[in-house]
Image 1: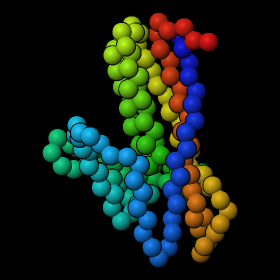
Image 2 (image 1 turned 180 degrees about the vertical axis):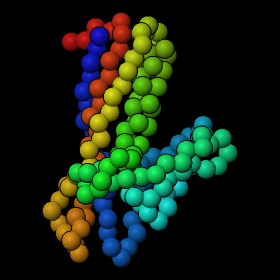
Image 3 (image 1 turned 180 degrees about the horizontal axis):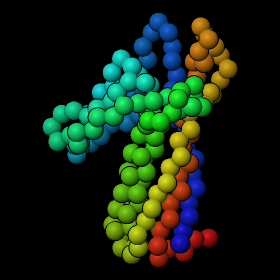
Image 4 (image 1 turned 30 degrees about the horizontal axis):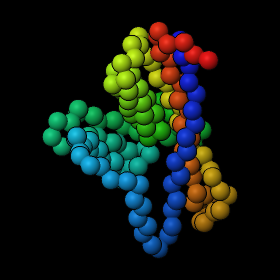
Length: 145
């Protein structure tokens, strides 16, 4: 069984008073688009999917206790971790098939952490936050190092 660990970081930068656009690449072909909406409650509000072929996702969000909340509900980082795990597992299996590699069942676990990248504070809020993702994949029939 192969076990992989990998960290990646995505930074979110907030700059007051001006918008900043980033281009990370473009798609040559869009396969589909998923749509979601967050209400005014943000971290203690609701999120839902919308549009054609949506899965009728409609969730109440709660802040994680480590972020000052009471817990008991889902939070945006959990949703991100679920999506990342599903996408990573799908990509892993697709690459195996396309390369003629036979693998058994696979399982991907993702841990997403929200944290402060910089102690720069404006109005009591850290302006440079980051996400860290740890990926752990187990693949039956594949020997690891």
